[in-house]
Each structure stands twice: as C-alpha cells, then as structure tokens.
Length: 324
Ligand SMILES: Cc1cc2nc3c(=O)[nH]c(=O)nc-3n(C[C@H](O)[C@H](O)[C@H](O)COP(=O)(O)OP(=O)(O)OC[C@H]3O[C@@H](n4cnc5c(N)ncnc54)[C@H](O)[C@@H]3O)c2cc1C
Image 1 (cartoon, helix red, strand yellow):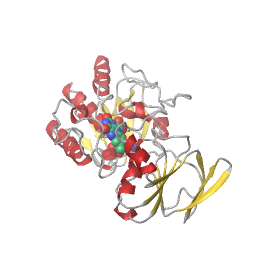
Image 2 (cartoon, rainbow, N blue to C red):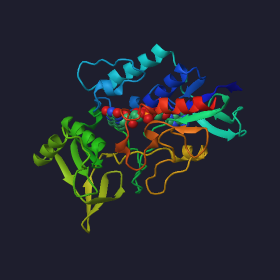
Image 3 (cartoon, rainbow, N blue to C red):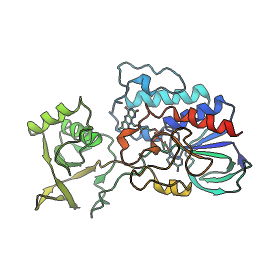
Image 4 (tube, rainbow, N blue to C red):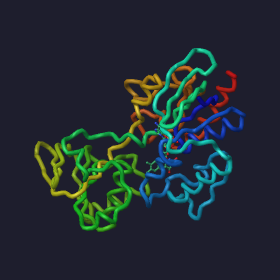
C-alpha cells in the first residue's frame, strides 16, 4: 500500500493549486485524475475562449501570457501542462478515485483509498472534482438517444442539419450562435420567458440580433415533452408543438457529483444544494475531508469559477499544517 499525507481528487486548475500549496509546505501528496490533465477544460468546446483574462487563470504565480486578453482553450491547455512541468507535480493520470474506507480516528493512516490502479493510505483528502462531469438531465423520454448531447465540441458535422439547442444560459447561447454560424438550422428552446440575465454582456446583442434576423428561431416558455428520432416535442402555453430535428444539444447545466460526495460522507444542503464546508478552512462536515474549487458550488454554478476559487489550496494546506 502506498502512503501519502494527502490525496487530491481531480487535476483541474484548483486540484493543481492544492498540489502546489502542499508541495511548497513539504506535505507529501498525490493528485488523482480519472482522465487527462485538466480533463474538464480538455472537454470544453474546441473554439471557446475564456471569459477571464489570462492573469486571472494563473496559478502558483506562474505567468500566463497570451496574444489576446482572453485565452483560448488551446492556450489554457498549454499553460496548465507548463504548470505541471514547472512544479513537477505528482499526478496519477487516468487513475480514478473509486472508494474510501475510514480506518481510524487518529492521524495514522486515517483513510484507505482505492483507485482504479492502486491502494493508498492517507490522512487528508481534497475533493476537487468540479461539476462538469454530471449534466443536469431534462428527464424526458428520448434523452438517451445518440442524437442528444449534453456536451458540445465543434460544429462542422451539423452543417445543413436541424439542430435544437435547449437552455437559456451562456453555454446554450454560445452553442446556438456558433452552430448557426456554421450553417445549421437552429431552434433555441427556452423554458423561461427570456434569455438568462447571466448571459455575458458582449454575447447578448449577438444572439438578440440573430434572433431578430431569423437565423435562430426561439421558442420561449417551452417545456420539453419528449424527443424522438426525428422530432422534438414541447408544450408552449397549452399547445403541443413538434419540430423536425436531427440533433439536440441539451445545454441545461452541470452539477457536482453527489455520489462521490456521499462516498466521502459529505452532506449536501437541502436548499442551496452546496456541500457542507467551512468557508475559511474548506473542511467538510467529515474531519480530514476538504472541498476545493467549483465542486463547492450549489445550484448556482455561475457563482464559482477558477478566478475566485484559486485561494482554496492555500486555505486548506494552512489548516492541514496546523494539525501536523
Ligand atoms: C465553457 C466553459 C467556460 C468557462 N470559462 C471560464 C473562465 O473564463 N474563467 C473561469 O474562471 N472559469 C471558467 N469556467 C469555469 C471553470 O473553468 C471550470 O469550472 C474549472 O475547470 C473549474 O476548476 P476545478 O479545478 O474546480 O474543476 P475541474 O476543472 O472541473 O476539474 C475537476 C477534475 O476532477 C476530475 N475527476 C472527477 N471525478 C474524478 C474521480 N472520481 N477520480 C479522479 N478524478 C476525477 C475531472 O476529470 C476533472 O479533471 C468555464 C467553464 C465552462 C464549462
């Protein structure tokens, strides 16, 4: 069995921040990552640019220089690879956290962790698994069809196809605009009365103008009833409407992995849906188990990002240090 003081689950930007902070304090650690390095960012849309300027995505005080103010996905991937090389961070890539057993109450191999590759003992665990792995489902029949996607990568294969985009927030609007520009016929299906207030201010005029000129057909107050091989069916003001359709992008948001939080015995607040934690130490209700990064968010996933969670690593490590 391998022993480290601290296991960090997730090699997103904030998992990396935790690794850097542990290393700087001489605490032995390993970062576990079920996919490739910064796996969530790797799965973001190919042509996305970050809304944050590069300096706000920097970690470990390593400069992030880009050509334009807002970095592209490729620039971010390159930057985080460089961070790992620079600090020589200890990461097990393609190594999934599976389960944990509570061995004893003292700081003597308190936890035993099973991953897809190894067995570890450790005294502290940080859950930095974000929320991008768990889409919020619409829960209608047909959602499981191969033409229905909860992630968007690129648009070429959608040329001259009838594409329905479901959702009203940034990710839905970004997809609708990009796919419309690449020659698809777009229906934007929105449950509420309007596009979300959270849509970025520099994107809003673009989508409003594309709707006005008929490049995007929008249906407000529309509740999806079912998705079939060739149709999307929804209710709008007591009328049932069925539109022809080849592909569906259900951009209805993402949420922290509650099964993983259960395994770590972390409670979830019933109203905010946020996992219990002390905002100063970032320790959860289970002593020795910490939360870092956007996994801390509840229902309102727009509230936390890389920019405003980069300090979690130093907060956690200073609390761990006091216990050693
Ligand atoms: C399209 C898009 C654009 C964004 N733009 C910005 C922006 O401009 N600025 C900004 O600050 N934020 C932005 N965000 C938000 C931010 O990028 C992400 O939320 C960020 O990746 C969060 O970092 P994190 O380290 O908390 O989690 P993540 O980056 O999601 O990392 C979690 C990691 O945990 C791994 N993992 C999950 N389960 C396991 C397991 N069982 N075992 C091992 N590993 C596991 C995942 O594979 C993943 O690599 C954007 C988000 C999206 C979707």
